[in-house]
Length: 99
Image (cartoon, rainbow, N blue to C red):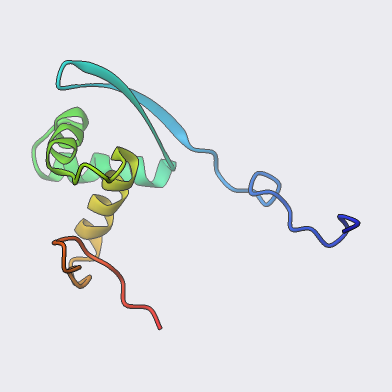
């Protein structure tokens, strides 16, 4: 390949960088990187539920499946809040029904 037809990297296409936050969860420090839009959605969810962002993230962390990364669990929680009609997956999660 000569590279002339290569797709541009996300940063070259104007993608927004992930925003990393450090949190203290269950007595240990952890860092989570999410898109700014997801952080904004989670802050709104926390406010609506009368929680701090750290308390919301702590609850999500405590109830997520062990094989699901925290960042993924946070994104799914944001989607569940705004898309409550998403079908449930057999394992109790949700999955979109594409094609």
